Length: 405
Ligand code: AMP
Image 1 (cartoon, protein in one colour):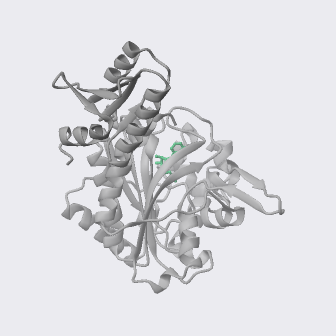
Image 2 (tube, rainbow, N blue to C red):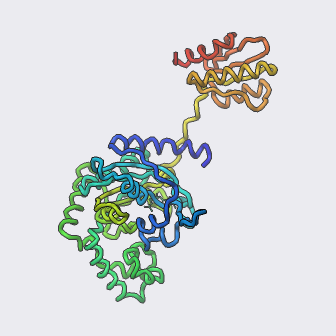
Image 3 (tube, rainbow, N blue to C red):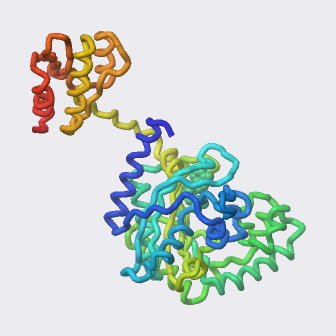
């Protein structure tokens, strides 16, 4: 990530931070690598991530470690390890950091990418689902991410899902001959992924497949209806997509995804859902939870170019003399920064003309020319005025000029 890339990301992070912290989410940071076991159990053995996308290695002590491919499992581990169930619930956290997946790299899909995510743990209220969705929508809206679509669905409870899974497997087996090899090979392991397939034969089979949304228990259907009513209440448009399947195994009830038409094949900007079973699966008590992750690179791609503001330079220290003048310029530069000014010192041995050119490239507001006379010529670049002053007065003069004293 080059400095200009970093500058472009600043606003994304600031917008997310402001919106999430305002809603009571506090920043959490988890390790970049964890025991492989955590992701195998937490993400799910049948997922693409665990099957083929993890960077796994043995450390010097014979432990199998994995670079984190996603954030939720680690946060749930932290919740369990640190007894966060004793805190007032739900515990609301957000994160930002690099994640790693061994995927075929292409536009919008990288092997190291950055996510912003939010998790709310310890409540099964539909308002929690709606809250996290609305917060992500607000972030994307504030960033002016174009061509947005929100799709939502419900996967029901584990029992409903298990029964439905069998029903779907039956349907897939009855049409096995028409399916792609990939889907056929995963009828046992992950039949729901068949809904994601682009293969024409498979798509035909899926058009007549039973839908999980039609099989929800009364409780799950009511939960889903309430989530929708809350989204309606804030007038957030969405489409109900009965075939929405998230790539991770641990989801239950609400799932959602934001896509952008401004992106190409990799159109997913962010998504998430409810993962009520995950914390118990990782050794904690039964704890309902909900959250999402959004890709920073995708948000930037879909938000289009936003020129980053150039860094401000209050004072540029130019040297027009020998060693003594260089030392004085260095000292005034350090003093200026201590006083809170953005100050840069000439470091490339340029001629005076070259230094003035560099100062103007940086749009420096003041240029101090330190020469062998023992005085400083302080140029106010906006007013095109010049003062002759002593070293100790430079910082105070610039502070005054910048309205900072
Ligand atoms: P997931 O954890 O798979 O639900 O991904 C959440 C979001 O992270 C996606 O919607 C993308 O915006 C982003 N994302 C996932 N994988 C990648 C990747 N390989 N490269 C860039 N962004 C990604």
